[in-house]
Amino acid sequence: MDRLRLVSLIKQKQSYLSVGLDTDLDKIPPHLLNSQDPIFEFNKAIIDATRDLCVAYKPNIAFYECYGVKGWSSLEKTINYIGKDHFIIADAKRGDIGNTSARYAKTFFETLKADAVTVSPYMGSDSVKPFLGFENKWVILLALTSNQGSGDFQRIESKDAISLYTEVIKTSMTWGTDSNLMYVVGATHPNDLVEIRKIIPNHFLLIPGVGAQGGSLSAVSDASLNDDIGIIVNSSRGIIYASNGEDFADAARAKAKELQSEMATILNNRN
Amino acid sequence: MDRLRLVSLIKQKQSYLSVGLDTDLDKIPPHLLNSQDPIFEFNKAIIDATRDLCVAYKPNIAFYECYGVKGWSSLEKTINYIGKDHFIIADAKRGDIGNTSARYAKTFFETLKADAVTVSPYMGSDSVKPFLGFENKWVILLALTSNQGSGDFQRIESKDAISLYTEVIKTSMTWGTDSNLMYVVGATHPNDLVEIRKIIPNHFLLIPGVGAQGGSLSAVSDASLNDDIGIIVNSSRGIIYASNGEDFADAARAKAKELQSEMATILNNRN
Image (tube, rainbow over all chains, first blue to last red; front, side, top):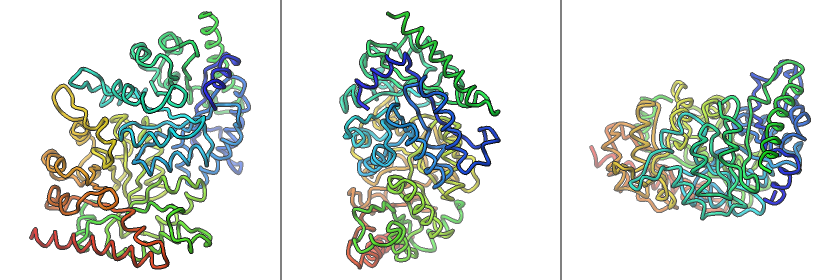
């Protein structure tokens, strides 16, 4: 999906919501466990219930991989079921030497047909660039993640008083463009979002950490919206596990609707 | 596999060689492509030809994942075929927020039954620790990787003139022990290996980059062997693609034998 289409979907739906598909057999409603592919059945119901409210789905690859061959099959079916009208983010946090990153890119962009993949910057330019050579496909590079441990290394300051995550952004922004490169910045760091916007005013940001991890939608929106909206805010557990009864899809829709309505209000108030 | 067993295998075989299984349909001998599972057939022949010469196999997960469900099936069969007498390293470079890293750990240690998994440190402690809670299983944390791009961020110096990769080692060494935590240090950095050994004299190091990437076995051995040997040196393409004719397994054996003989000589000269 290209940038124009993504921006147009967001504006049309008044939503910059991504629904994270961290689908876990230990957490989905027990009545689904007897079906042939409970993970896919769960995802299918969540997708049907939220399709009009979100612009993106973000399957978290760990939750599929952990079931081996069966999990990959559920993942492929899920991505096919989502179809072409949503931005599909393979949340995989990959990154390796050049020939290996090229394989991961092929996996997520060609085999799985995702629009974007999350990539770790630790191994540097030749670990990231192989992901950037695919038309209308995106790298979403980890910058400042939402978790507690983000402070361990990402905030280390260099001799020039530049934090590692800032250095990652400043160095990597030349590897791609604002039409094939986004950054992950956790919703748990609204003050840093303001500083990050000064460095990359036009790039899209993927913002996880609203909901279960405690980030505030209005705070992150205030800090980072730009003229093209420029952010995708993800919620996973807060939406998909809103109920684990037979009403799970309706409950997920209600939670997604709550976020989408708040987004619509925020966007209206800006105009 | 526990540390005692690993050290004993190394001493008994006079080998600290890992054979990297970066199995690529574009590079394996064409006569295998007609079999039902060419990736597994290739790996099976390579394993049969090198079993007595190496202590570890390192399947590079990207090369399996890129074929989706079929690739995961080849990977599972390969790991089962290797069996319990080799140290199996899932080269996956994973790392995510805690609940997700826990899933990746389950994938590689329980579903796939690998002994070790490579992990990226970028997201900090809570992204690494979930991998450390499995008995006789290992995290191999990226420190200073073998590729050109390792210079982009891993060598950034902090205010206290400590490079990021050194900070990663110093911080993370308290998260585990020298019996469940190793580090990746590329063979392309022999001088840095000497400095790293001063910080972690007892930890095992996984050293890729000998062969196709240009590292020297004798230089890295001089710089990093300890009383328990303490290193595993990996070669992938240099061994498995030594020939792409019908003699590919014999050619792989000859290359592995060359490295193992050099290792035996190095170990003898130290005694």
